[in-house]
Image 1 (tube, rainbow, N blue to C red):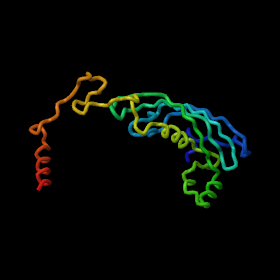
Image 2 (image 1 turned 90 degrees about the vertical axis):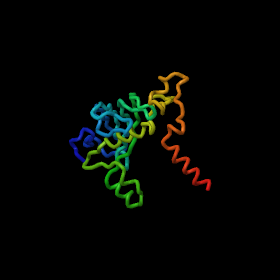
Image 3 (image 1 turned 135 degrees about the vertical axis):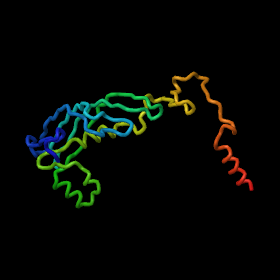
Image 4 (image 1 turned 60 degrees about the vertical axis):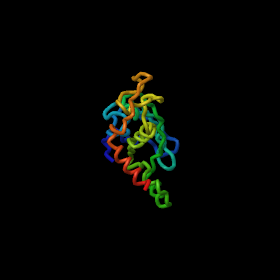
Length: 188
């Protein structure tokens, strides 16, 4: 962990007494790859982070919210769209000895848990999870986006109601001969 990272919180002022808490508010530049291929927070754009870090017996509970501006590309019509998100954050960062105990007890997921190292905790993975897991798997510019016409590639919403493309005839279809041959082979 690089303690110079703006995402690393110094826990020196947080007593290890259960219930003790500190507030941590920052505007940070979004890291790279904060999203998926079609949708995400642009690198360097502002993240508004408001966290409360609270001592608990296993470590530090990180709660609060992260707000960001999301830019996406519609999976149906490839139109660019944007919106703001304000996502809840809730994650437990474990003391190293507690995480080790969980691993030794057979908790297979414990190795993935955030951990407190030398009195610091990196909140970037926690913020990343809050934002990326809230993004749609198939982003759409509008819930009822009709997509693109397969014949001409224009957006259906921009085309007249009677828009159509004639189906290819056998003479126009390069696969017609292959289909005819396959049908002939199957009939024999």
